[in-house]
Length: 230
Image 1 (cartoon, helix red, strand yellow):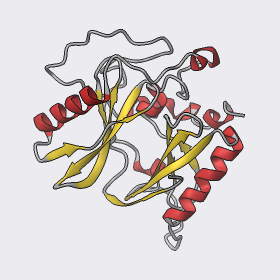
Image 2 (cartoon, one colour; image 1 turned 60 degrees about the horizontal axis):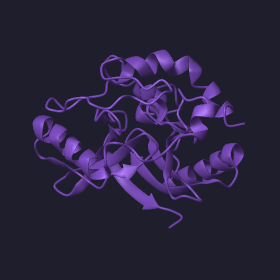
Image 3 (cartoon, helix red, strand yellow; image 1 turned 135 degrees about the horizontal axis):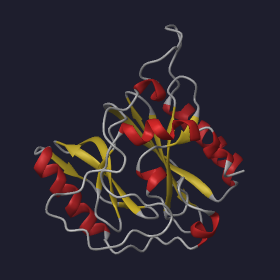
């Protein structure tokens, strides 16, 4: 059942590869090898803007259609997790952005962050987030085999503190008035909120082996956040 969650995304892979490119801090020397399982280095996915139609920002929606609420999005994620993962994963956070809802999911038993999901703001459709969640996740990612996923670990050469430093280094170079929040640990990478004047602006991820920084440029402006399952 878990593999079915990816089937609808196979056709989107070429689009995803050209949609957004990871960023490597200029002063960081890559000293750690990528783990097995299709980890991809910086620059291998091209560049360009995300198709907002995929996220509900553009597209063929009825102009009279109403957007779902943040609670509706959370319920949709709960149904998705129950269908594909039983009770092993739980929703911990939903963020509403202009173009989509973003959901953060963790393992119930370990408390380790498992995956990142997107929810269409009109249809309520739930699907795995593109970018690091697909390409860097060593347990739940698209490029990982079942055998590799059983060996996945959240212990990475780059620590959460170093991930925060690398993320801030990138922001200081390119977005000087931005700062980063606390690094949240996933399998193979970290995800951090980006802040502007102390308020959430968006997010980025840092590869736990290479230090590559990948800014999530497919959300639009931040609106609100709600936490679940303390």
